Image (tube, rainbow, N blue to C red; front, side, top):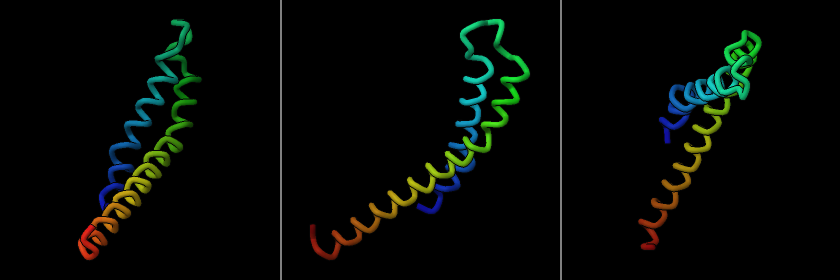
Length: 80
């Protein structure tokens, strides 16, 4: 629960950035448009948004883990 936001910042965010950069720069349909400077700049423009998405995914995962912890904690006392 505590480490999920850190995982979002340091693992999920960079993976999202790498995936977005690859799709923007190198996965173009026309080979002549691959690797152009404008697509590289646009991929860099997208990087902060992708990092924030990774952080949000980490926070959601943290909240979900907290909910599971509370459910399991309550089931101990009420013998579910």
